[in-house]
Length: 521
Ligand SMILES: Cc1cc2nc3c(=O)[nH]c(=O)nc-3n(C[C@H](O)[C@H](O)[C@H](O)COP(=O)(O)OP(=O)(O)OC[C@H]3O[C@@H](n4cnc5c(N)ncnc54)[C@H](O)[C@@H]3O)c2cc1C
Image (tube, protein in one colour):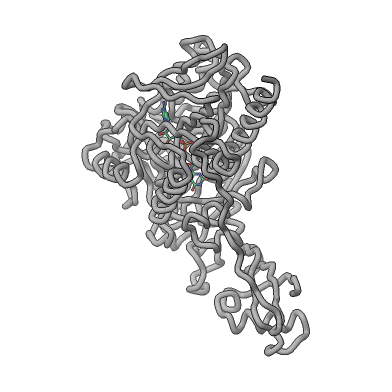
């Protein structure tokens, strides 16, 4: 087997015969000498010409290629040490799967519903304009990652084993191609089945998952957190608790604040979702309209600095849909998702501006919750400006930047309704100023990005957690031994993959602690 790098045109990449011919040329061997070409890694580069950069394994005709086995070695954990995991998002689910490998018994406690029932609540939410506070785009089985674009790209490669996360997705039904794609994505339509398969694995090996259980407090034993108390009075107990409730679980932050348990304000980002016709983005990224029809809907990633603030594209969804992601009535939040095919006619992306405590001194009185209160106020004002009912304030990009009224709107792919609103009225001045300059900077990087064909929808505010739940090197909260804050809600991760890796890291630290404690006893 030979390992080679190939630079392929889309036509070569998508045609096995041409792919083999390129490998032959690279190795200087005859076509019939090759048995199988296995692509190990690929990335699409459209900076100069359009090329798939591929790392491939070439098997000669007398060599055997064995397809990888993605099955994990789970143990039956019915008699293992029970560990309570709050939240069935990526952090909680991947922690539970790792617990099964370590012989611990995961007991997941989740406020929302299983994916299928959750989908019905989401449909109802769009229809009625009213939010179910326990079952929505952020809450329910799979967490905020279920009805998402399912992008699996992370920059946090040093925080854990990205490959191990991909393998678990493939093991539960994802296309093995995610193993090779630098910018892999799954898509909402596939994710729900994958999440349901993860649940089946957890149950098959003796783990538990309890839905409709909103955690409102902790149970203590021997000076440690040993369980949780739910809104309906039920309690779940174990040897320790992993808290993976995501960045929208404001009631959990309030619980800590009320009890005087340590919390920290954490910078986050705020902005709008921009939507362009996908064709326009394709033509920019693929250098004109004459590009290969084999190419996928194009993506982009943009960043600039304005007045000391980072302005950046976030969660870009080619061929996507804009969704209402509020978790309570009276709030307005937008986010993006897409199906596996990314086949909608629109490209959307969050465009966000970094916000830290020094930007909002008037909120200092709220201490660790300063940025959370600021985020909440913006979401409420945005809802009020649009008339409520999940209506999204909307304005054309050029009208916003040029200070014109929102009299004319483009057609958009938002799941709710759009209301013409001057976004200057809902965004803080410093955010609006940074966005206006940022869009002009982006146009210098991507000519044509600044266009009246683009729409802006508000508000993109659930970018990351505005609060951190601190933890020590042992993974435990400094004051609450036995409690392991974890994932995006604890402020230690952002995105599906990094949250999943954090879940794994925390359950491993938790197991170390349990082993040490048992050895001492
Ligand atoms: C629409 C949308 C699209 C996205 N697209 C992408 C993408 O393409 N790629 C990407 O990497 N990231 C994406 N994200 C972000 C990603 O989903 C999150 O970063 C990730 O899900 C965080 O994982 P987590 O497990 O830490 O928390 P979450 O996924 O938020 O999960 C937390 C879980 O805890 C539960 N919970 C909360 N409070 C309680 C309580 N009191 N009691 C019991 N249970 C509770 C919630 O119901 C939820 O299931 C998207 C997010 C949204 C909303």
